[in-house]
Each structure stands twice: as C-alpha cells, then as structure tokens.
Length: 126
Length: 171
Image (cartoon, rainbow over all chains, first blue to last red; front, top):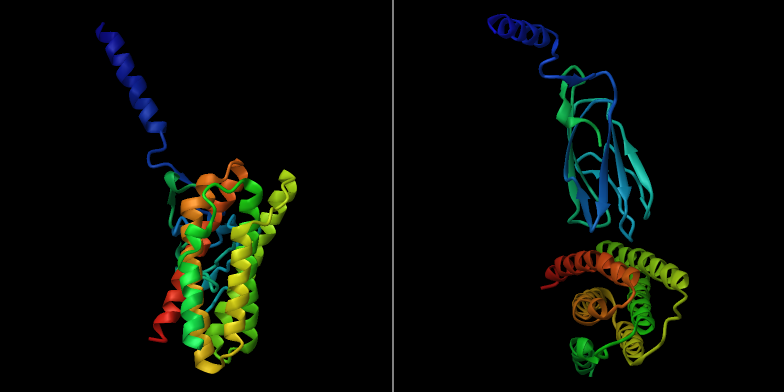
C-alpha cells in the first residue's frame, strides 16, 4: 500500500515537471480577431492584440460604415458596404481609438501590445 | 402662410402612426418601407444640393446613402420572397407628405432652409420609428421581412440622434 502511494506520488511529480504551466501561444505567430459592425455598433468595442496581428472588421449592417482613427486618421478604411470586410494589421504598439465617419456615435478602441509580450491562451484569436 | 403650412405638415407627421392602418400585410409593409426610405432620399438630395452648410450637406448625403442601402436590401428581399409592394393609404400619405415637405423647402434658402430640413428630419424619423415599433414590426408575417425591419431600426435611431444634434445648433 505504501509502495503504491509512493509510486503515485512519483508519477505525479514527473507529470508536474513536464507540464507547461501558464501555457502561452507563440507570440511570434500572428493572430486574427474579428470585430462585427452590427446594429450601428462595433462589437467588441475593445480589442487587445499584439503588433502584426490582424483585426478583421466585418460589416453585417444594412448601411455602410467606416473604421477611421479618431485623432490623426492614421488609418481609414473608406466605405465598408454591407457584407464587406476591412483588415487592419498594426505594426507598432499603442492605443488606437477609431470611429465611423458616417455615424458620430459609433466608436471603438484597439490596444496594440508589443510582440515580445507572451499572450495568455485565453486571448487566442476568434 | 409658411408657418401654417409648416405646422400642418408637422401635424400630419405626428398623426403618421395612427394613419398607418392597423394590420397591414407584408406587401403593404414593403410598400410603406420603400416609400418611407425614398421620401427621405428625395429630401436629402434637395438639401445636399441647395444647402450651403457643409454639415447639413454631409448629413443629407448620409441620409441618401443609408436610406438607399436600406431600400436596396428591402427590394432584394421582396424580390426573393416574390412579394410585390402594394401601395396603400399609408404609403400614399407618406409620399404626399414628402412632396409637401419638398414644396415647403423650395420656398426657403440659407439658414431657414437648413433649419426646416433638420426639423423635418427629426420629426420624420421619430414618426417612422414609432410606426416601425407599433405597426410594421409587430404585423410583419414573414420572418425575413420582420428581421429586416428589426435590423434597420438602429440605423433610424442613429439618424434621429444625429438630426437632433444638428437641430440643437439651430436653437
């Protein structure tokens, strides 16, 4: 009985040594995230990504929209019609607040982090 | 006289939900939706051409683009469903109201035109939203038509909000 218990403990220890605690996805592999434009809103309104990841804006509304950076217009999708998409792949870290040029109340935020930061498994792309 | 005409038009808009027949069928709902969009497109085209205010022009162009997109979706759907929009008392009343609004706008210019256009846009969107909520959406029988009406509602709400923001600048 005692030998069985020791064996089990030893096996558990070996398993723990080989387990990858705090597993992360490779931060070198770009991920893709989707923001739906629906009901005159961007959803999700906040996206946190790493540089060189891609955010895909998909317009499922009946009317056209834009994705335009608020302050300096550093990015502007132009008109995105219904069922069209537009991709944004930032290469630098920062917080980018954007809006729809056509509809003043529509806005969202993209937070871009440096690629050197390991991302948690839970933030895997959708 | 202009004031009387303006208030008469406003009163007609206020009465719009009650003018919408109690239980329109899907073909009549389709005609109401298409007409409602076209009326706003026509008003937008006039304002975009005649206004000298860039903010008003931008808003008017937005109304043209958005309502045209909604109408395109509506026409595609009724074509798919093989439903022919059926003109009815409500759609005709909407068209008549739109014609009267345009006639009124044609007598104006400058800030007076801009104000009248925006005031009408606020009243018009309020009444169309009320009609959507109380008559059109509840009575739509076809699930896809109902879904389209529900899907378009947030756009009309956004238009109303934008129009109210503009209206506040004329107070």
